[in-house]
Length: 216
Image (cartoon, rainbow, N blue to C red):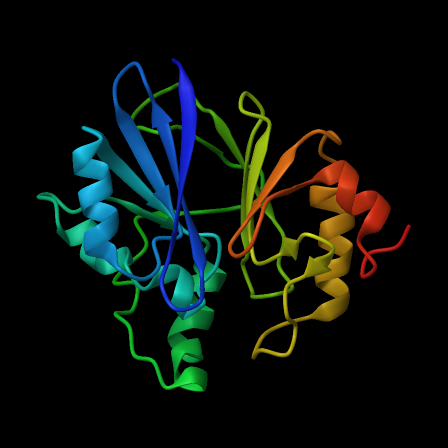
């Protein structure tokens, strides 16, 4: 298996949408498919990829806006992987209302994520390439996807370059987020590239040194 990743930045909130690709089979996963799902679908098809799964870091509307459309563009629908707590929080407190934006809700969870799970690009494959880590705090059930082979972690809105995710939303917990950043993100190797839901990438080592929100 030869792994690669690609990024699209789309929509009014500058969401980063990530694709993990097995270049040997052309199978791929999309992570946090936000706005403009047709653009994402065209990107997948123009590259000749086979979409096998949709992975979601957390349930805020800008990260899930395209989940339903992408899943249902295929027959049978593409499986959706999401933490049950994040799915529940999104149903109970749809965040799009804060901005007057309506998006399709995540229709279901086919693969309930949990801390410590290992995932493959093809859900039926025995070859697992990503570790799921719970980083709740910005949103209940927030997770990151850590790929040791590529030295990357897709971190959603848990952490940004010299910043962290907001904790003024329903269900947020500031101290829990800080604890999880220290325990689940800062425990990764320093050269791990952190791929956030917005803005530019950073590294674990940089954030340990320069992130003013996370000390010690």
